[in-house]
Length: 201
Image 1 (cartoon, helix red, strand yellow):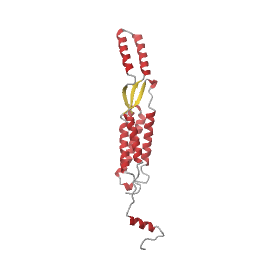
Image 2 (tube, helix red, strand yellow):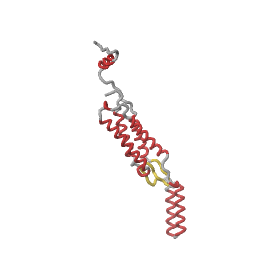
Image 3 (tube, helix red, strand yellow):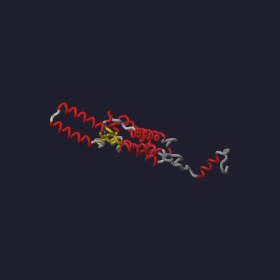
Image 4 (cartoon, helix red, strand yellow):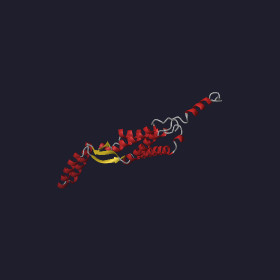
């Protein structure tokens, strides 16, 4: 092994992080629930409908619906993935994960000595970008129009954050430093650099 080569453990961590990130795009990122404003809006619409087409059966149905809507405040109605809600960002995250996985797989497949100096810096950038994008959408989730619905974070968003951080941290894993060749050969090369003199000459 050569001095300063990329850690195989770090490569595996980055590769696993890329897989986790790609899978998380299709997992639930947000839980959708109804707000009190949403309940009030639907009740207003219901009253208008009952007032225009009011009959006994419709009024009874609206009374039951009022109770259901009131109980639904804060309750999760449906879960949405990044692929469903964040179309552009979902594609971006998949591309970043694919590039990071490709880089790490190529590095794992070739001999360590053939890795160019500075290899792995691109994976740090890919992981950093993915982390920034995911963190932004966790802190600033999409806002449903009118404030009728509210979004809460689900496991997909947390897995995406974990995966993107694994990509970056794996690339930052301490490099393996080992001396190449035996000590006598290194000593002779060092002496040969001094005025052309070698031991025994």
